[in-house]
Length: 183
Image (cartoon, rainbow, N blue to C red; front, side, top):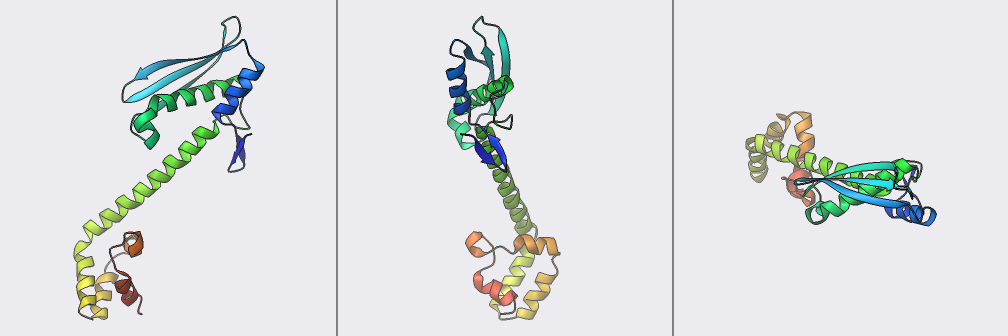
């Protein structure tokens, strides 16, 4: 059964293979490794019962780029290539990509977004450590006014990046954040 992702219907590769096997029992699905290094490239082909090439699909995976690709880049790549060859053959949902490919892409985007956020946060802490320390010292000395002067020296974007809850790894404690909010 196709999977609905953002309002579009995607078949899994397993569904595409099963549909192919049930309908075209004398036809062939074949795969060929095109490259096997840091990047794995696989070509999948659909051949009719005479051996005539009907459709192809290629896929590429980078070893170690995801958790699955740390141990199974070749297998992951072969699955994607098969899904693409079968989509080119006409066994797709409403979309060419398989549910597997779309879910992997969404995960990759989420990882990249989270990574970018962590990098921005780390950079903001590193570049503004002196100000952060001055805010903390002023709060520790019960001098909220001085703490706020230091804090307000930062631009709004930097303040937004640094205003992260301690439970999410933020540099200011819950008490420091309360004092800075005026509590």
